[in-house]
Image (cartoon, rainbow, N blue to C red; front, side, top):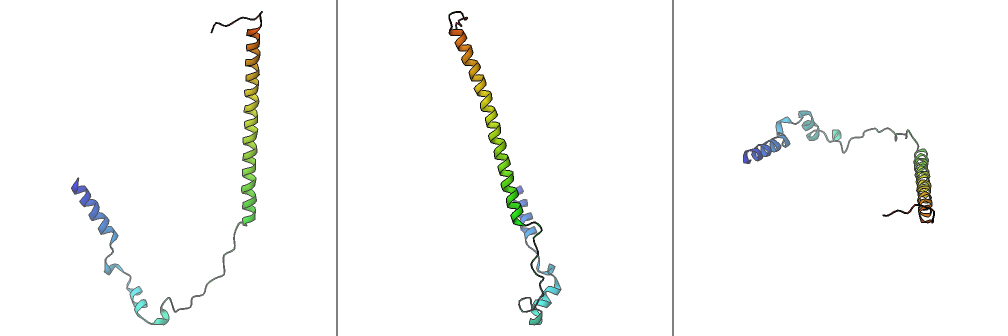
Length: 109
């Protein structure tokens, strides 16, 4: 088990450390060279801000619409389940009344 931990440690350390010779030689010359070439002091042209492809208002209205439709479907389903339960409850009440009447069959349970 120790050898597995040692191999894991060796692999993680060796893959995480980059040798100094592996750096880009051009990068070293530009950072140590002329200050005008330095990133901090050089002017770099920038394009304007990118325009949005989809406006946020349409997304907001779409999200609220989807939530509203899902809420309506949920309430409609609850209404149907309530109606089915009420129907079953009425059927059970009629069955109990039929059993309690003198002419009805009495259950022994």
